[in-house]
Length: 355
Picture (cartoon, rainbow, N blue to C red):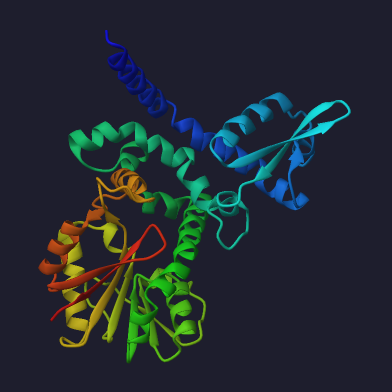
């Protein structure tokens, strides 16, 4: 076997080993979050020793050697940094936070991804992946094959899981709010009347839009059981209803992470109701979704493919879509004109017009 062929074979094998053990990355990260390591280091204001980290963990029988092994992997994955400092007894290793990754891992931070990480690595969701091949063979979701019901019904009957799920959704919503407001500031500024946020939950997103653009008359529209829990927001009216039946009239409609949860047929029904609700000549819809680029090299392109499989495991008809998929969907729903606006986030903005 030639050397170049052997090197290529070894690289191929190494890539497979990386795939085989990819789960250890997320499990080690979950371990660090459960132990509160990021917050312990942050509370000291700078890099600290392993002993100081151990002292901050609430455990009477902590295994420091195991802690060091977990930290070693997470340093390799750029979750933490190490600094080596000389001392009288030899070299001391100090563990610190990274400039661009650790900020997303602090509990209670405005930009924290902790609730989402804990949800995605929760045993209730992880077991769904063992049914992925059945999803391919038979259709349906991995979650329902394991639990006997869909995730929304499971959450309804399990308050702790429901709280975890809601916290995860809320943290990702906060994460994209700023980029949406910045990336589409001119688009929101050009709305000369009303905006309805379809499937807007408890109204946090549309409230932020109104705060930045107080000339907009905003409506938060969702199912009755959601609206009953929605707090009051200045400049926002809460309206309950079903988007498959009718949508309140407005000059513009916002659909943030709604359509990816439904089949093409259901999406077209929603879009046709949007057409009825906005002015034909001046109306527009603002879709906030991921746009799949299977061969792309962007920072979130591989994550998008993973999200698509996540939808397969938890959403009966949900999926992520390519630009061509969105074009066909929008045309079928009565929106022949659209443009995609990139924002500094996992999601993009798709602005579409009926005429």
